Amino acid sequence: MRIHHFLAAILAASALTAAAADLSKIKEWTGGAPPPLALKDLDGKERQLADYRGKVVVLNFWATWCAPCIEEMPSFERLAAKMADEPFALVTVNFGEKPARITPFLKKIGVDVPVLLDTDMRASKAWVKRGLPTTFVIDADQNIRYQVLGELAWDAPEVEAKIRELLPKQ
Image 1 (cartoon, helix red, strand yellow):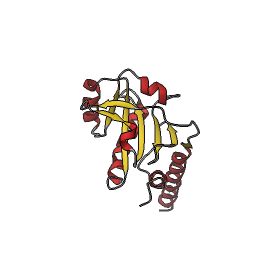
Image 2: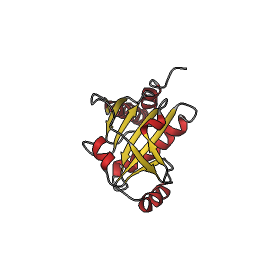
Image 3: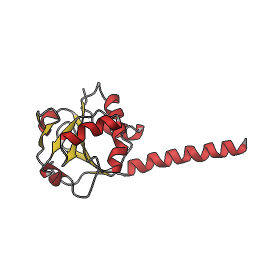
């Protein structure tokens, strides 16, 4: 019985450590104004970053061949569901792949997220400097506030709270 309590304590401590590690990946942005972003979505509609003015935007750059990107995708979907009634937008940008690859891939992993297509990778090259996944958190005034390099549990309560702090005051 004592072993069960000991194991439970270790698991709880591990969970707290993992959550803290997640927050350590969120870095304050010091790189200035966001680069331009104007891309078509999977339906062929042109989208620009300015379309989301007034909302907090989580902007994620990813690819189907990127294992950490795949791992964090479900947490983006859960975060978007939690934030559905808020001035919030999740926007993902695929890194150089075509819809014929992206659509079946999303279906296969069971994730439904908005995707912008960067088939020529110009936008990705302007935004992403180190690797995938790279994610930016942009405030309602279109200022980049945070950058995350690598995978993150986006629906973790601590991460969600950090995003909610940026929501416009009503």
